Length: 173
Image (cartoon, rainbow, N blue to C red; front, side, top):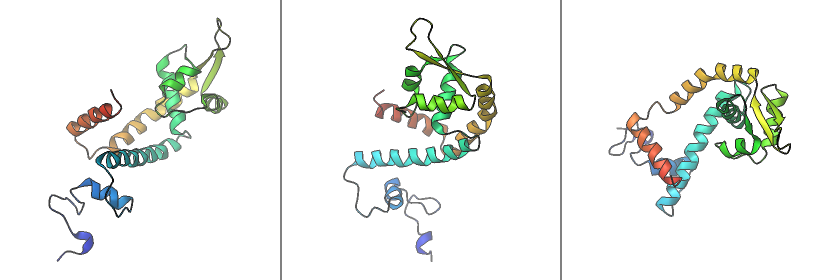
């Protein structure tokens, strides 16, 4: 006879319920059903994003960076030698940061980025990754990529493709 913890519902594996909604309800310690499928989906997205982000933040912390700092450095690496105006860096961020100036200040203090004024419009400030910033990202590339793969290793490539498509649909793309 199975204990309560070992009980399995039809279609479940390793004691996990086959219906992910019950899993989310249990994680959130929610007794009542969700008000709608939309609410359930929204909360599942938020919870999943938080789990993934927390895991990645821990990995980035090993290199002394936050997720937003890492994102900004990657954007600047991709921008090339000229860099980007601060406003454009802000537009490209995965998670919007209302204070790009402060973010770049911190990176500049560490010698990872530098800022210059546009020669034609002195109001525009460009951010540019430094050689030290490039070195740090090269050092991080392998471990961060591996960590990303590890976080999603249990999801098939076909399911990942479907997930990417569905998330694009949710974002309206």
